[in-house]
Structures are given as structure tokens and as C-alpha cells.
Image 1 (spheres, rainbow, N blue to C red):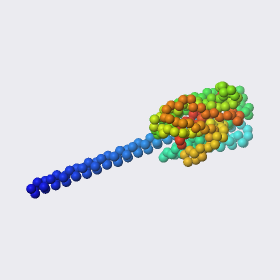
Image 2: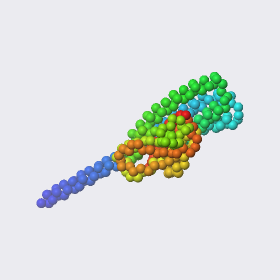
Image 3: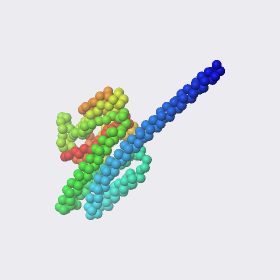
Image 4: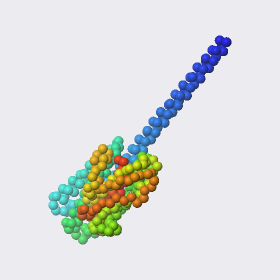
Length: 303
């Protein structure tokens, strides 16, 4: 009888040890899986920031090339003020590219800062070129050369746009699931009667139109979409207040409140009444919501 009880006790002890071992294995597997998920999320965030940095580097390449095309003309210009502005802009670009190359650990706030600096430099470049043209210092040969430069810049802009589209596609794949996504973003000048105005200098309103695509992962409810429109000179249009983005107060052109249900919302429109003189050139349209920049596109408006 004693031997039988002893066997039962040993059998029970063995079952307890096996159960403890199985629990330890399960706990290890759960912990390992969480670590893998966190690692993949961190890698995806770094990849997205790297793609944004690549887009900024390509935009800088186009700006630097455009400055280089005008360098010979700068040497022939009279007036220390113009030359000083040119040299100051060139120094800013060189500092910016050095910062881009030296970044090792990416952060969204630093990428945002670099993007804003590049937008400012692009506006300064276009304003500077307009000054050069207004001085009337070019002869017939220089004007022909300018046409060639414009053609080259259009090709560079096309290259930047192609890279931007590629990066945007990749960023959409790795972006956080809860982020609002949009498509079909457009910028349209309007007449007083609401019809399309081809000449931007005569526009009475600017209309930004887009579609919010279906996303079952995005929390439903009231959302505010903030619009920023930057002129070719690098100035923010309008005075629509400000919003918090990445820990800072950011001014905006206008905003729109929507009720998001998770379904597609086509034809969302935000209007801005023109209250300043508009010039032809490249305008930057940015949309923000839920502390995300959900869109950033460039549009060329003509006279």
C-alpha cells in the first residue's frame, strides 16, 4: 500500500513539474512575440522617417541645381544687397544638406523642421529669380539661356515629383493604421461666382478638394482638419488661427470640422477667401489632423 501511494505522489509531482514547464515556455513565447512586434514597429517608423528625409534630399538637389544655374548671372549683377541675399541663401542650403547627411537617429520633429526650412528656401529662390528678371540686366543671349534653365528645372521638378510619389506610396504602407488617409487632393482658384479661374492673379477664392478614404482602423467621431497653403514666396496664406503639432503651435490658413464614420468621404472642400495679391508659381498645400501631417503636395498656378 505504501509503494502504491509513493508512486502516486511521484506521478503527481511529475505532472506539476510538466505544467510549470509548459507555463514557462508559454510565457517566454508571449514575451518574445511582444519584443518582435515592438521591434518591427520601431523599424517601420524609422523607415518612414528615412523616406521623408530622402524626399527632402531630392528637393534640395533641385534647389541647389537651380541656384547653380544662376550663379554666373549673380557675378555680373550690380548691387551688394542682391549678392548678399544670394550668398546668405546659398549658405543656408549648405548648412541644411550637412544636417541631413549628419542625422543618424531620425525624429519626426527634426524631419518637420527640415521640411519647413526647405519650403522657406524654395520660396526665397523663386523670389530671388523674380528680382533678377525685374532688373532687366539680361541680354538676348541670357534670356535664351533662361529658357533652357527653365526647361531643365521642369525636368528636375518631374524627377522630384516621381520620387515623392514613390516615397508617398511606401509611407502609406508603413504608416500607423489609425492615421486618416486622403486621395485626389487638388488646389483650384475660383472666381467670385464660384467658377474656376485660370489666372491665379484674378482669383477671389482658393478651394482645396480631397477625398477621405475608408479606414476601419481610424477612430470615428468629430475631427478637425487644418489647412496650410504656402505661396511661391514662402509665405503662409491667411490667418486661420493655429493648432498643436508635434508639441508646437503651428499657424494655419483655414480649418474644417467633420464627422468621420470610417466610411469614404468624397468631395471634402476647404475654402480660403483671397485677401492678398497672388502670384503665379508653385503653391504648397498641407493637411493636418489628429497630430499627423496627412498630406503635402505642390501645385503650379499660372497667370
